[in-house]
Length: 101
Image (tube, rainbow, N blue to C red; front, side, top):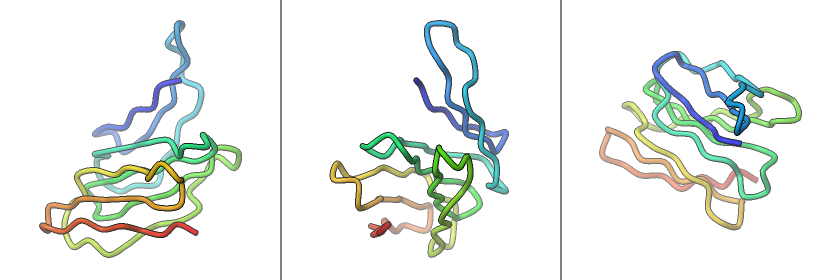
């Protein structure tokens, strides 16, 4: 499975080798700059030009948490290997560590 996000404001999971779309999520109001699976594989995080970072639950197929605090576009995001923290980096010259529990 591969995860992508783009200018269409959507994240998508793709199955390989066929390349078929397995899941799609929408909710950001601007382009997606980053997306990453939680180490457990049950959730994902996305970052966006809309200044937010979102946590998505794959079994519920929806956003379960919106992290607000950046004042400009968020350029990237990543899970910590323990799965309890998300890092984000923004064009507002800040990086944040979020405790998602």
